[in-house]
Image 1 (cartoon, rainbow, N blue to C red):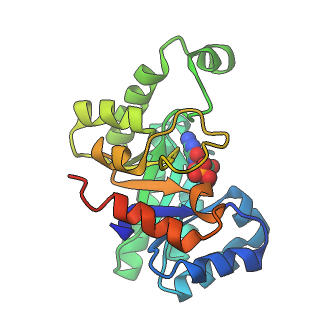
Image 2: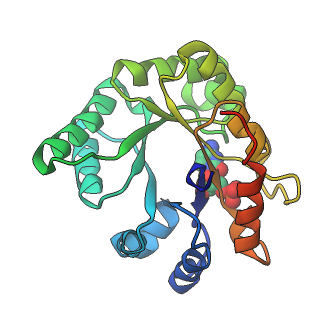
Length: 238
Ligand code: C5P
């Protein structure tokens, strides 16, 4: 079950991050996001790859198709294993991202990263969609429509909350690989996450991977916390 847990590296300080990675020697996946990528860039990814770790590059690309395509292509060359784009960037943009992976695969004759489309950020609710994006549909309806756009663009991965995973599985079956953040074991603090589920429930509801940050790196004993989560997932039917 180690390979279902993605540890978010949102802590400060390059040495602190590397120390954590070395402490969590059983962990397979690490998430590099906007904050630590801005601070440490490709150096951090290279260190993770040196340790044979899988990297989830969460930079949520959203730009004109060509810029996204070129960004995805260079991310492929960094050997990351998953990366995110915003589905709201449109079908052409998502297709361009997928094309970059295909080009990389043809050129290097090796498998490129899985692209995950972000639908509606969990920080948005129905009111925000209406006020800020002039969208009259509910979050759930919007998520399903954006997922359908991802499918049309040939993208087969999504980032989704556990609640959305359930809806997505009902509508699209097993087509998408789904990665879910907002995970809190019963024994940990919720922090600023409002809608949380346990690791076990998230996997039980159909997520393929869970992203967990503070319950691991913020605990007194990160290795023990990771191990506890891994154990909790042992008997979940997937
Ligand atoms: O510390 P915590 O477990 O809350 O970290 C969750 C990680 O997942 C953070 O890196 C956060 O930015 C990310 N994330 C999230 N909710 C989303 C999308 C990403 O918490 N909807």
